[in-house]
Length: 230
Image 1: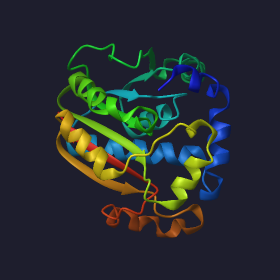
Image 2: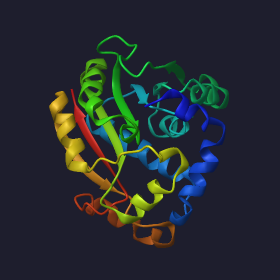
Image 3: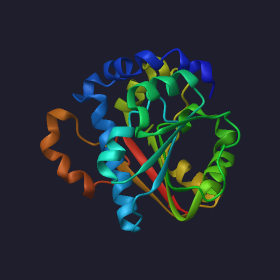
Image 4: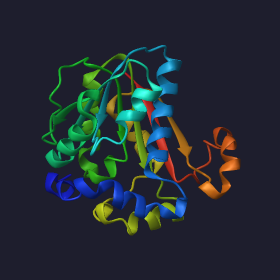
């Protein structure tokens, strides 16, 4: 995870993302919106209200408006190694979040600081040897009962692999399968860990999307998310 790698994409990130996912028939905001809804559902299940949320590897902040929409009273902290991405996010969203730089090693927060952490398609940019260490640090910053959610691309989906292989800012990505990421959350000490698959139907088949809730066990979705609690 090199800061300069994403500094050069900050100003064009949405444009590049939109071009890359064109085959899905959706805009980038669609992907941010369902991630925020999934986190809101997990928080509601655990009766966590007005949470302090860490957006780990936030980039240019695409989750910020959707977290505010889906999680009333959320206090959002965006963390990233890319200073240019954070500057772009701050210029776009202003006081809707706090924007904090990260050295890639130690989270600059006290223990028990957050009610939830979400990492949206971040870990495939981090060397595998560092995953459990970083997850343990994220666990440290969660309050007891806090929720961690890690979203990743599903390497078992051929369309996902094609999208990642042709994406300019994913050229150094190493995809992680769901069971492996589930095991890493457990190794880091998170409890009640669960794996759900997501995004089964493109926009042309959106009429079928209500079925996704019943398909989350099926490892064919374009993405997946793993959740756990402290």
